[in-house]
Length: 520
Image 1 (tube, rainbow, N blue to C red):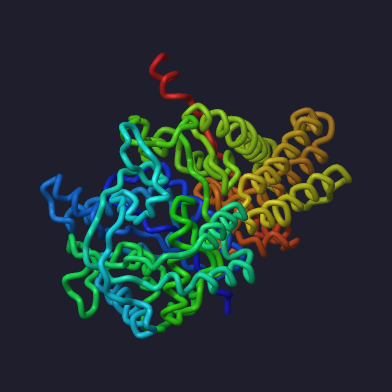
Image 2: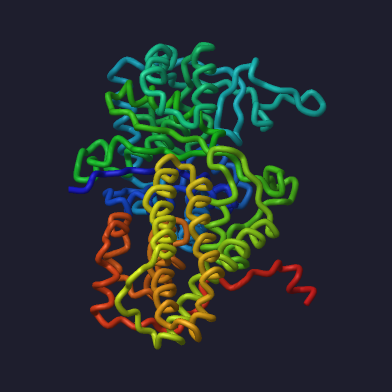
């Protein structure tokens, strides 16, 4: 039986259409899911939309819609984007699903049975945009003396009856968790930030609201709806059928909750405390990635710099966009993107290097060898190149991807691509055609073998183009895993089938900036 691997993204808040940040997190999660599948794991990958709360209720009212109508429309945009970006999710969860309400209420009852919920009155500062309560000492002063949250969002003084969760009771247990499992919060900078926050003292948490009714009803107190984080965080287990421990429960605890750094506190303080209270096993790791900045600036509607990821996929191609997002930015840190940066990176590495390598190799085999591969007898230079490629594909890239260091892993892979192109230039098979046809054949065979390894290794990042190349190479669909990289007999087996290489179609045409096209 394959070992289960459960990865989740944060569920996305659909009070507007998806932006590039949603695409970034979900592509990264998809790369991890695909990588783990290629490593033989039984992967379950969940994403979805977080559809309750005051923000959604107010937005729907502004638009003259019911909250459910707004949620249905906006959730559809997220699903459409993820399908377009070739996201291989197994479950797209919506918090408006009946099963999610059942799960949230079951978790609530367990916390209540443990003595961790009590009714009181809430007075304090609340940010509608963050769906979060803040202490006075956390607030910052905006223009004109306006009080703002640490994220710079407006806050409102709120007074209402509320159920509270005894978060203070879990302070020491949480600190023990962080000390005993240093990898529970990653990267380390986020772990240190959360530890400082918890060490500063935890106050009990308001977990219900009465001022609106768009949410999961509190069991036995139907005039209350659950504060959005109890409802939202429960998605990670409701998607597996909680509280029933059916077939999907084998995936819990989650191996990885992949989230943005701005919601790290909710996932590493509130969520484990809720689970401890309810007697549910904790996830193995929460990873808070950085922000994707637009030319160095955070995207916002007020600045008018919000980018539609559909437009980028349309302009540059899905795989080129996916490659850029994973290659350009050290995962975990903030990173910047721009159309010219995407074009520069994609042209240099995908079109000029990897794409050109595939095009030249397969064209020469098709044209000069009539597509026939033949028996392979490598010389020293050929073996050296294949060792370089194998090291990158079997060790360099996988080891870094296991650590979520995508840019470093792709760098190792890219060095192998460069080594192949240098080998082409040094061996000059077009010259060998006249002087030593047999040597030309060996050089082209070496490149053919290298291409297969390179294509298998990079599949998580550019799945469509890598699959297309593997098909052009004649590699069966069930022979494209990381385990298959170690199969030394695949080339001989392919030759014995009589496979012939057809003239290739270009993998990565060179990109142009839209402005350049307009100017032309």
